[in-house]
Length: 259
Image 1 (tube, one colour):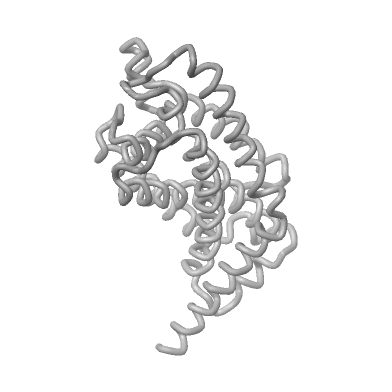
Image 2: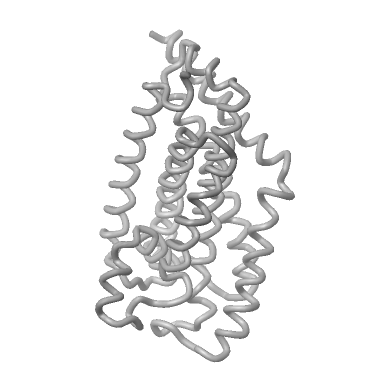
């Protein structure tokens, strides 16, 4: 039993180290761009647009958009890291070596997910540093801020893993970020409060799961949110459970791996 646990631990740590080294080797492509994007968002939306809007939900507009900008970096990079890494593993056939090895699929999945979370949180920290150069914010509820960030990163890492399982070409990897993630993120309340929308569009906006993550994270930093905090946690945890079970099922069946 102990030998089995030790083998699982070694396999898990090996996958995690591989994933972290993978995105750190090309940090100019994986870590730097989100920081540059954050600077542009702060200058364009915070500086130019914010000077005209002044306040949103009773806080300066620049402060209002900071949580959303940070969360956008976490979401996109958590997803991108796992989807690209898993897809490359399929194309180079070394995922087959992991699947046939005496290691549980839970360990394999967890290793990839932790790698995605590591990149997502690293980007989130870097974007936070950049964003906080423009503001004097500090998290009002640090535990909420950190927990929402970690849970959201796990959720989108699972989404990236599932996308890679079905993908057959690199084009398939880019479809979801371009046509699903980007619209959901921009319409998730990064740059506006849903309270400014007509009642019908407020109801439509509440169908967007990203809205709950951004507002939960905003509550952690600003102490205010358009959505009850427990709603944010409930939505994220439900998605994690569903996506996690789906990814594990696909891995057990060898979907996209076994020909």
